[in-house]
Image (cartoon, rainbow, N blue to C red; front, side, top):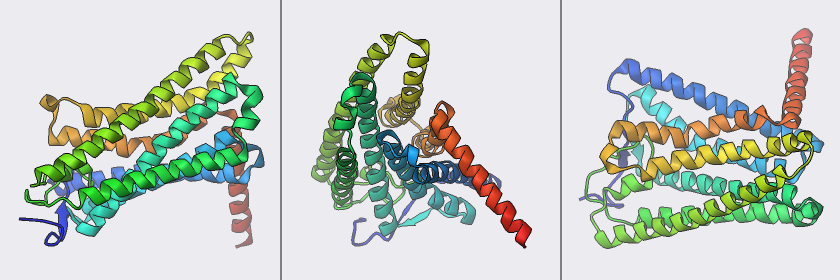
Length: 318
């Protein structure tokens, strides 16, 4: 019988059995992690340093990049360490912290993606009211609501999940601590159903955000198609398509991970899908946002040129 008072650690799912493949996974995750750190770090720095990017759209993008950095830092470093040191263990406290921060950051990110859809809707469908509806105070309030809702969501799920007695061992079928896999170890039907009920309620709230995003983009595309000039349509699409691509990547990978048929479920497939929805989006999002956004590309280019210039000056001094 395992429970919160007797269990000291969980065992995560290993990426591979052979040492060579373990090291390969370590270097692969290290490359992805460094790419995520670099991409999101550049976006955060560029937005913070360039005053012409101090607008609601980039303010929300700044928060999104911070959340991406946090979410990938919650799961990948521990997976890298386990692959490098040939271990599967994660402490009970470490697992609880991983669940809390992952749920906090992922749910807050989804809230920000919903807010960003509203930002694009107002900018394109109600441009005359943009300054009123999305003033600095309104943006701060929406950001605080997104962070606060993510924190509340994480507290409820983490507290409820780790209050459930466990009697099915301590091996998790995932490379990081994930609520559904912890629930599989439960030996209390009532506590299990309580957490499942909380997950169902969360799914309905998430579906409500999804409907809001879809309806926002229906209105956006209708408004864009009414713009007479091709240049105007191109500019409107260039500000919307990156966000739509990020939302599609986020939702498609997460929904497939949790809603795929049991008939095709297997530990190896679950592992790959978990990587797709928890690791790939934070690394790819900076690239998506910088591909079609000329303002952001210009700011990033100036930042890189400024950094290289100062590095060259420092090298000349020494």
